Length: 457
Ligand code: F0G
Image 1: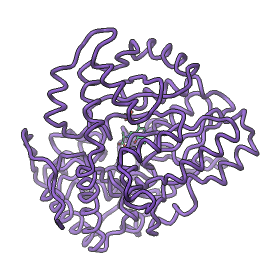
Image 2 (image 1 turned 90 degrees about the horizontal axis):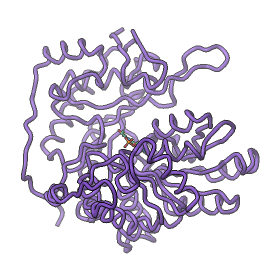
Image 3 (image 1 turned 120 degrees about the vertical axis):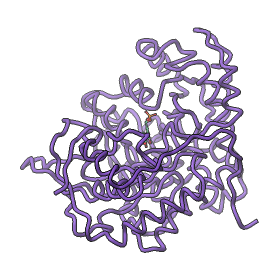
Image 4 (image 1 turned 180 degrees about the horizontal axis):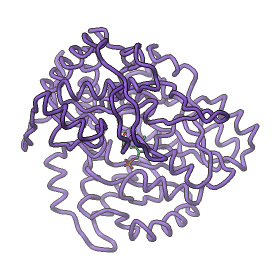
């Protein structure tokens, strides 16, 4: 078989609405030129995020009906706990309402002033939850990742030499935990190799420090290992995932990604001492330990989703459909982060719009134009999202990269939707010289990209 097809058929559909360019111009202006402020009914193809936007299967909907809403000891919790433990092998499984709630709980007792948390690259909520405790969130990305165009297979890896140096220079007492994010969402969705996870564990063991995975996209990472590392070609993706977790001491997880759930997450670990602390905090804000911040039906949907995400025909289709978008626009000359990962395409807006200076937000300008052109919503990951300042002068500094992420919801859009997006991107690319930058009119002191108002320069 050469054609890779969607390994499902569609049982329930939702209409999407095409607006005119004039309507979109008015809508975007009214939204202060901020795509987060545009109503989803005014979007045609929504590639803002792959989080919480998956289509659930008929078996997940059936599990929802079977969800048991008992306050304590619900059978839905035990199904969830078993599903998570079967894959991760961790002893203590603690449900939370989403990934950042797991982060908040973990860093409440692990973080604090003077502490450093290294990560290959922190996702923005992870960084915010680390910094909120007074600790420092340190990104230790492998040097080869800085070349966005190279085809190296595992550009999401952690820089293990830098990790070792950090332990030597700062001292292990300052580093309560090391994290690895799979796949590396803030760095082009690039995967992390098994050797890198194993190597990080060796460094951590030397300094008696736990290693945690930020496991949101663990199945996609496992499948990328299978495809890219010859040692794993013949290993089942479930066994690869299990091995990834076997090198870690715990994980945080947003079930809104690789569990096909619309809400949910968990914190899992082997340490009894940490689990006790986590459960005490859980009860304070999330709920009793057998439901966390979730309904029993959500736990049931996650348990079923975790079984489905490791089906290899699904993962083959998932990678093929993302690669389809990437290769078609790259063939047309559009600069994208290479190689293509699993959950998103990242357009390199600095090279797409070289005439727009970084502090006029080329990524934002491109994301706005994709919306105006075809009702397609993506997300800027660049100087608007990462507001950096020169520590001495206080002047704004550009981000290292100016990207637009087109994150693909799981099992939601068909190939003709993607063909439409390709057509729109190539059309915008042909007339790229007419696109202008933006300036900020109003902004919040942190996470400004969600609420800022802008205007065209
Ligand atoms: N870690 C990573 C790597 C993530 O991508 C996300 C969410 C989180 C943690 C937090 O999980 O949203 O359930 O609280 N990423 C979404 C995105 C929002 O669009 O990439 P959450």
